[in-house]
Length: 250
Image (tube, rainbow, N blue to C red; front, side):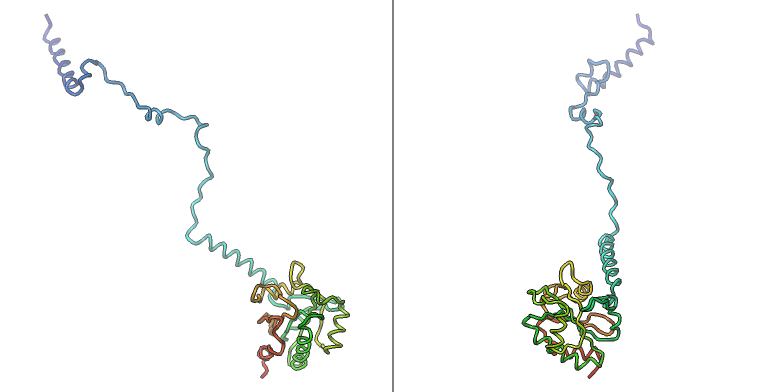
């Protein structure tokens, strides 16, 4: 015969099993909780992965710069390089060239003058007209501050093959050229004279910077700045008005 305390304990256990039986048919036969059984996908997620299977870490991600900084810095660096290049040779007065005898000529000696710089040739179809008109213009304005600087060049059709002495004699004897004629130079390419590199960078031509032919012309003001550039076929007399304007004469 069970005592009253034992009967009470059995009744309490029976009441505790009743909700389990009503909620899960199979639970009444199990005196312990149903163990957790993860699915295959859950097992994959929960199982530890070996370090070797993990992807290699990439480079650290840098935060993007503020809007516009990258392009601004690039433009600023390019501008700084361009400004440094231009400031190192600010005018033609910063250059030294060779005369026909090989002597150094400091172009700073032409400060305060208006200059017309021309690459000349003795055997070109433009030789007669250009040499004739250059002498006419020089004779007319040499006492008012004009100087013409002639640089022989053999890069166009090999039309200036002679020596410096032959070139000077040809220009002075045939065309009465009184303006200075300098050493023969290259005006294009890697071996171009530094003066011509400066002239071309200051005033590009219609189809690029390179000199196109004999008798291309650059007009320089009294401060040594390149103010204009003329094609080989542009006659010296046709630019007389521009020369007069820089000279300040009527």
